Length: 282
Image (cartoon, rainbow, N blue to C red):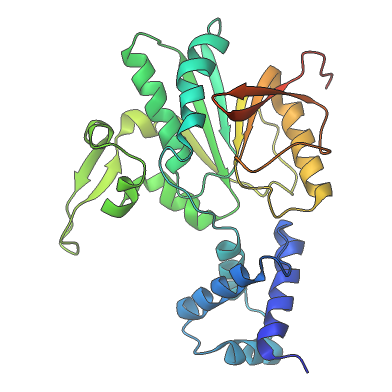
């Protein structure tokens, strides 16, 4: 006989796959269990048994549904995560590959709490100081409205800014914010960085707006738990939204093998970057 825990895991895993495409199976269901336990704290329900009984009796209310989908898609992030990716952006992509372009469009397709787009904006500001004065736009999207609102505020705790930010960059691009409620300051991104970023809620599996093409798309550690079919569809849509010979950056453990033939593999300092093929036809 199945336990309430097993029933709830099956119920939520099915809901999450239908709504987001993310698959929780035997290999990663422990992650879902951890997120269910976090959910219990947020909704002040004492146990998995109590939550299952509540759903069986009254159905799934909109608050619980929203929270479990949010928790299920909330990926780990930090400033300048995987530094070689940002080294590619700073030393190759902007100064060399984009040398003849005055305007660069960038899409962070799973922005989480904002560390990735802010890291990119900091690089662009650093390059501007070196005389590379290109205009740029960053679109930052995520399925979670909650993390997008947090990202747009651009306020980070001391622990968050210590993950990836040097003291020099912290001082240069963030302002300290003192609150009566906190003994230590938080840090807010300066407007010279945040003003270049537009935030928009977007589920990659749902229809997309009519975006203007991008020069580079970051979609890192997003498609890992998607089905093969969903991966193929999203990657194909990325190709159609890239400017000629544009670039796609995936997570370090992600590959396009057997998923797409639209990209060439570029090796940079032992990381793989995907470049749209010269002969790609939309």
